[in-house]
Length: 437
Image (cartoon, rainbow, N blue to C red; front, side):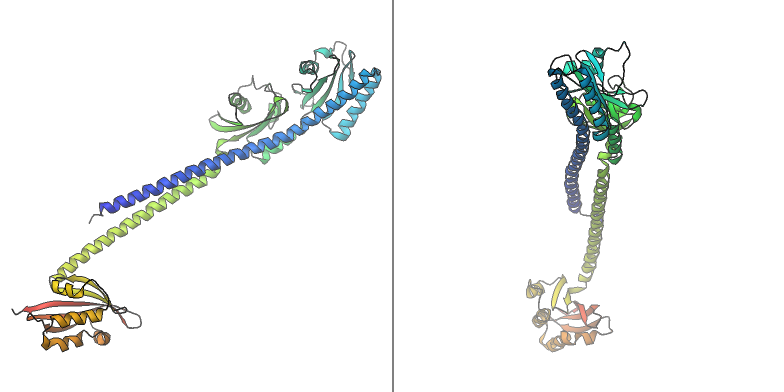
């Protein structure tokens, strides 16, 4: 037996509707999770950049304070020995008491080079040609960071912070070790599970990097490293993040601006952003499988129910060829259900109600039974004695004659008993035994 096409269509459309609703919800959830993950990563690098900036702000504050003191001394025409003494004292104070990353103050004053840590340059040393002096002159009185360099002896990235004084000739400068920033960047890379972290100056020079071998590299020229590829991708975007591919893998770079157009950058694998989506996708697929399975089970049950109904109809049709009418009676609530009835007269007598089975049955039999058999048939259909009469029997019968002189046989068949021995359901059947007309 085939399943009703309307039922198939109904459940198919139901499945499509549920799939659509779940797909839309999953997409919205996907977008929200991805957006929140990206925002979280942007906040990570922004917080890290704030930490790094604090270090550089200290350097700027130090150079501002020192330059103002020295400028006042120059205006007051204090001797160079006094200025040198001040440089030495400040160099010692900053390196020991304030920040051990500061390595000392130095500069050009009234055309002479002075060094606060006692370094004596070679005779051919020209301070006016040094990067720290040139950068200060270009900044026109603003504190400026000079392109970092890697100390060949210590392997530490060093940086100069310089400022030109108001005479447009004197420059005060200080060297700063970036080891503290380097250490903090390495910690952030581990803590936040970045593929790599870095700080780049405005020219693309690596100021700090989680891979110390990358320190000091020029990413405008470097092409092979992941940092160089990230830098190239960053140059083509205006937002706070960009995607790129390196050695067949997809990555995301998150950027936060720092002072003096420097950038703090973190790089992660793209799948880290979508990692939490794997579980959500699995749940989504399992939900679809569950819904599909439920629909299949429902369709199978419908098919079985239709098959059973079909078989029942066939059985009832077969019984209807023998019995004039068949009713299922609920003995517990005195209700009944028509299973088969070929008599229009009986149907009219029963009507649409399915209640008061005992009363209805008595009324029907009173109407159709010949007066000579009424007492016999009334005793037979008496529900109060029916349980006792049916006990241990497959069925009980009673013959009677109708008003139209048809010999009939009434039958009670027990269907279901309760555990306490009371009768729950019984079938009432009437067949024509002999037609005497």
